[in-house]
Amino acid sequence: MVLTAALAASSVHAQGAAAQGNAEAGRGKASMCVGCHEIPGYKASFPSVYRVPMITGQSGKYIEASLQAYRKGDRSHPTMRAIAGSLTDQDIADLAALYGSK
Image (tube, rainbow, N blue to C red; front, side):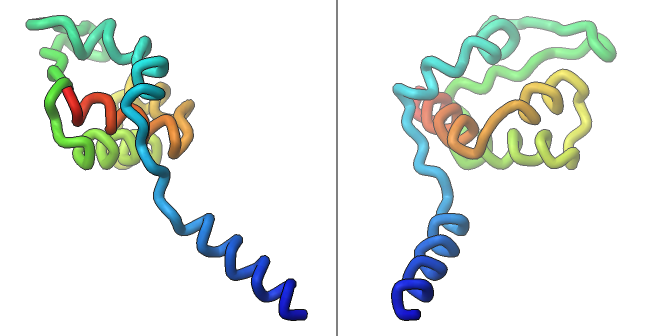
């Protein structure tokens, strides 16, 4: 019974813990980002023409919050929503660590 309670408590703690970002791991995941977000002055044309923001040097917390918002549907850009929807919490934390450290 004590073992069961300890396992349950550690499971709850693990689920509530935020993913720790790793910038080096983020480097391997950023290929989907660089084509738009690392080109100075880049403009995309879907769903309409707009200037794509540079994300290098943004706060890691801002990057993480933005990707979480796209994934949840709180932000509605179709391309970003699809990309963020394919990311795990660890992927998001790693990308936030990478772009927040540049």
